Image 1 (spheres, one colour):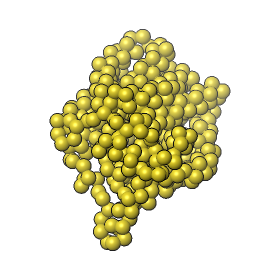
Image 2 (spheres, helix red, strand yellow; image 1 turned 135 degrees about the vertical axis):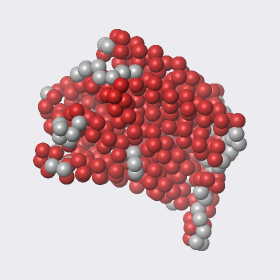
Image 3 (cartoon, helix red, strand yellow; image 1 turned 180 degrees about the vertical axis):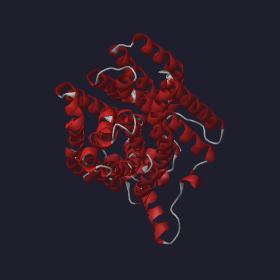
Length: 440
């Protein structure tokens, strides 16, 4: 299956989707990632609010564990909402994921502290994180499928890159909100209620996002949706991922996605790393988040354009190789310099190369999956990879730093993951499915 087949398979719906509406899908995706990722950027403050100081050092490990819990339900969301995207259409799936994320973010923002309601506070926090994880697990597949099917001929890479760029916008928005709050509020105010403001800002946009998504045209090929619905109605089975693609592709996609998600959450941890390991103030630490978000937002669309021009095989190789070469030297330099500007350079450098790989990886997966399983396939593969690898990354990195005393743990953890992902992609190319350039 190449890009030409994808474009043709979308039919009239494909031609009806404008760039503005594709951007609206990406904007909704950005809001969902903002709602989910804001938790990690306020991990220290949330730890102090919901966990007693006697539990762990400042509650940070408990907070990071709760952040990781949000990944547990992502595979379930990927299965349930992703299959809605294949059976009923991409738009219903996008509405479900967005609405559930809105409920989760409001719940986190309004949950009373441990000092107010005791053990019920962290239990409610965990419940709402599970709901957020379920929602986001069902977002990535339908939104990526929608963007690919909405793309004009020759623009598949660029349109899919909007999904990745929207994640950068989410990180950027989180960083800006955190920077402003840390600048205007005292540390006590930020711990008490300031972090809640960041969550409520995201919740306030949910009604607008639901309205926009409800007005989107459908892009799923009618034949694909009808095939799945007819099979289920007749008592049969809808098309399944393991029957549509080779096991080699599934394993490679899981490991490569795992490599990129570990890299993502190691870099996202920089704001916490700057405060907890390098002992910078929250004001400086949120600057790293802003830099990371800005780099992703700028680089992702460029990577999409390069995928269309050069082919996503070359972009995958470029992204993975550069991360392997730069991770360890970057952290060595950061710990030698120990200045805020060095954190900012690292926060911009690593995501720039990472998202060259991320965009190419999304295009490869979307292009390789047949339309009847595209939404659920991307959702399940991405959700399982991020649940296994991403949800544990920050907790493991923090725990290993505490155990070893080495500030180089993030670099070595990232390098190992990227090396495994690169080997998996090489195996996939040598196996049943080659990595081909986009020709949409």
